[in-house]
Image (cartoon, rainbow over all chains, first blue to last red; front, top):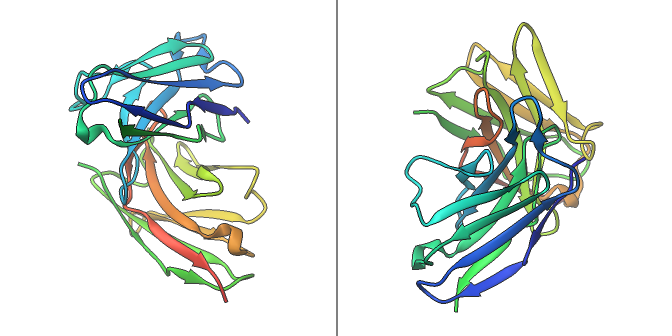
Amino acid sequence: DIVMTQSPDSLAVSLGERATINCKSSQTVLYSSDNKNYLTWYQQKPGQPPKVLIYWASTRESGVPDRFSGSGSGTDFTLTISSLQAEDVAIYYCQQYYNAPYTFGQGTKLEIK
Amino acid sequence: QVQLQQSGPGLVKPSQTLSLTCAISGDSVASKSAAWSWIRQSPSRGLEWLGRTYYRSKWSYDFAPSVKSRITITPDTSKNQFSLHLSSVTPEDTAIYFCARVKPLAGWLDPWGPGTLVTVSS
């Protein structure tokens, strides 16, 4: 199984400041035949299921504010929120869909400082 | 717009079988490009993908090694739904269970059902 490890486990950022969350996979999730990274980022708020923010590591889902961006390739990935808003308080997860079993990171809890 | 609606009991006794159903609207369980998954979430295990079913020329299944000996996912084309059956449950199976569609021709999970809290207790 591919192990996904996020850092940090929790993060407190001031409103308007940048938040950066990292995700590392135990093996590559870059599929050579199509040169795509099989990695997605979710946002989960209390009492709700996870919501897709980013897929293919860097493609923003329709309707997601452009302050959210994803980067990275191979085994190392980053989710960046360029200017933190109050509504961004949530837990963020990365997940690989390179192969089954799909696996998730342990989550990063983002709070306001 | 694809929507998923979950149903099933919120309390299961130890050693019994946990059964949940996910009803699909806006897509087909027999879609030849999507797949249909179950995921659970608990404080101790985080988000855990349990398995998936999909139809291409026949029904196929993939399961997480952690539950492979106990899990069944059953598609029902007549009702356009799929079900999770997890046998021999213990308190460690207490979690919020979600169903989700695996995005067609891709792989991320979208949309998700609302979740069902299942408690394993006598």
